[in-house]
Length: 258
View (cartoon, rainbow, N blue to C red):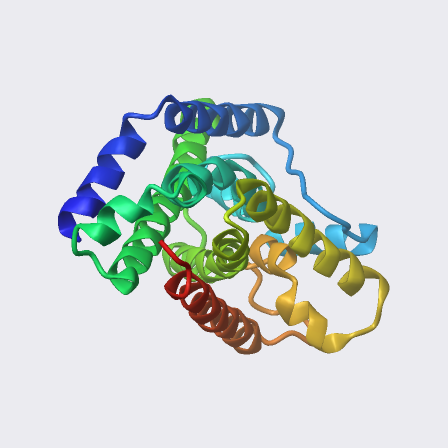
């Protein structure tokens, strides 16, 4: 199993697509910092956006303020990680090359667990790369600045919340990918499902739905005092999705014939 994981990491870091993805992410960071502008994906009410900007208090784009600003558009990382999902998981399932490892003595549970572990590690590194690039780019452009009170504690809490919501989104995609053995269906699910939830929560009054609104949760994770919102409930819902979808995905893979 360890050797298989090493081989997957080696293959990933030898793939041109991986470095193209990192280059595009760097360009995204540089353009955003240079323009001193943030963006969002999905449906966002203008009053809600104004309130979010007021809470985030992004004034001068020094390193610390840029970090805070970039927390409000971390959902863009979803789209930068789609190619990684295909490279790490999708390729083996679509081409059924997983059979080589299963016939060599690796159990299905070990194989499934190792694939998800690799993806989780790589996406965690993407978060680090995203925020570090923004911090360094802003330092070069506008200076480091002064850290707000409890900045690093809030930063760790924010990334933790975002990472869990991120994994919930991709666990749904992984489940669909394993069931269908189709990269297209996996990619479409990552794009469409969060957008559908985002639209429904924006246009309909369903209080429970906001705890499944992954993109909004990721983008406002820095804010601690959102009215009528429980971060504990949000995290519980996302962890529940991860557990349920991982079980369904494993059972689907377990019953796949070689």
